[in-house]
Amino acid sequence: MLKEAVELFERDRYEEALPLFQELAKAGSAEAMYYIGMMYYEGWGVEKSQEKAVEWWKKADRRGSLDAKYMLQTICATSSVFARE
Image 1 (cartoon, rainbow, N blue to C red):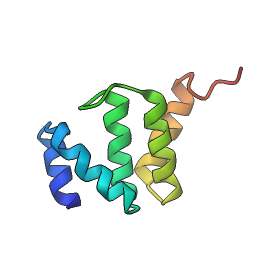
Image 2: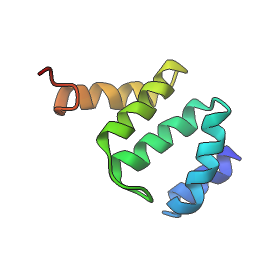
Image 3: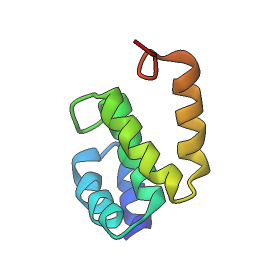
């Protein structure tokens, strides 16, 4: 199912890919969590939300996703999402 979801994602068919990614994420797929984060970060098929992207990437990072770790580090360096008040 992951392969199918990624193929849909790569063809910009985000509304079809999202439910597959969500099901996979619920089952613990770090890669699916990473992709959901990307969708929120870019606003692909969902309302754009950097905060939700970070939440998904944190979940993926805890499951060992290097892609999610990279995105979290990038955002940490360039965004106010992690700014201290």
